[in-house]
Image (cartoon, rainbow, N blue to C red; front, top):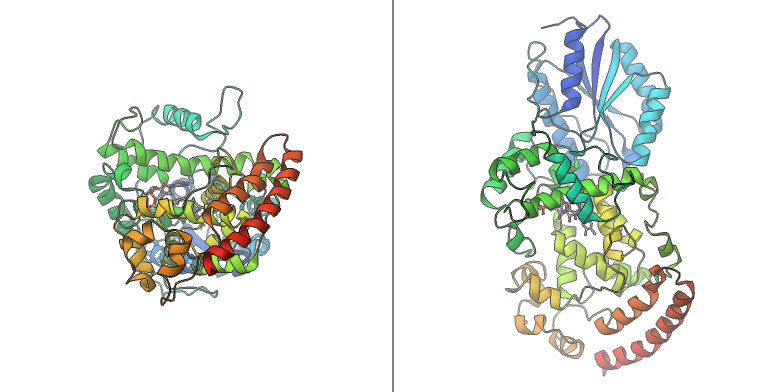
Length: 508
Ligand SMILES: Cc1cc2nc3c(=O)[nH]c(=O)nc-3n(C[C@H](O)[C@H](O)[C@H](O)COP(=O)(O)OP(=O)(O)OC[C@H]3O[C@@H](n4cnc5c(N)ncnc54)[C@H](O)[C@@H]3O)c2cc1C
């Protein structure tokens, strides 16, 4: 055990989205380095409010990060490792901040976990260029990006073969998580709570701490994984893990998730029929989108994955976008989902698909508007998964939902919320309305239904919106510049004609 803080060969752990002590390769590497060089270890977390604002990081996620970082400081103090929480407006200010920090504390090496996003990678290059020895561990994915490739040595553009190859590689080695390092010095006094100076929203309904996250993971694996496939599409049922917030900021590692899953379902990697397979596939979707972000850096810059989608003529009506954001579209499932997001900072996966499809296809609003709004609200906001989910829903992405498949927000309502429990929870305006009528929603009926309630009339007719979406989004078809031109003209005509019909239907 080394207590001398003034000699060189000290290691700095720079925490970013790996806010844990268990199974943290970066922390283990720093402790090993310090032990080998008779140095010591310090840790740092850099608060970057301007950068977070430009990345639209949700205030609820920032509060969650603040609470976890402070928890980490307490647990690091028990290992004899001090954690400094420093402020540096944005990424550009980091090289200088770190240079001063390492000089002050005689740090010879900085250890951090690599991140797949463009700005984060640029930040790390700038730190290296500033002369800091930065050692990066790759642990934001289970398998490193660019390691799961097709026979031509390229990144897959379709999920199913990617997942197959991923499983083949993953099963080759036993999955071992790393233990929390032993104390490197006597315990330090419990640190004071440090607040981040940025806009935050209370995240207290989400417990912080690795023990809480690991317990949630174990309980889910033990009690719910087997029923996941049957329950995962019903937002009124607590049928998914709700671990995304923990994975997004690294309170849990993907390796921990996989290890716990395989301890219950050892055949999940090898048998399609394994009860663990369905949830495993969700973890692989997470990897797929992260690998894509590295293979196609333009995704970080919010470009369409499919360049043909650049010619889509989005309508981008701000009034309709606002109604969608506020849960006032007149479609109960869409509105209940948006209110779940606004009130809790989380939304069920099926509803993310329904609401994203509704915005991009029914209202023809550019997916980037929705992506940004989700990011500003989600406690689990994550560029790769959010971008992937939005482009999948809009039909502009990699292995996306085809442009002509448009979720029906009425039949989805009956399928996903058969008892109406979810809708009623978020739409108290519909309390007195018969569930059968909500499920069988027809525009004229709905207009009558909601007379006397505060609930909005439908913003657009489903059949009309579907036809219009298919016409406009046909731009995505290969070689369809002309078709797109015709499609847009047709859509404008449909828009004019159907709006007259719709007005008649609603207002008589
Ligand atoms: C439009 C849209 C936006 C999304 N934005 C995000 C986001 O910002 N952050 C985020 O973590 N997920 C996002 N997702 C994916 C998914 O909706 C959430 O990961 C999931 O709802 C989280 O709930 P859970 O933890 O209970 O998931 P579970 O169903 O228990 O799945 C386990 C884990 O697998 C991962 N996962 C599951 N589904 C997906 C998926 N489709 N894509 C990538 N990873 C997945 C998550 O890390 C999740 O925690 C988005 C999906 C869509 C359609």
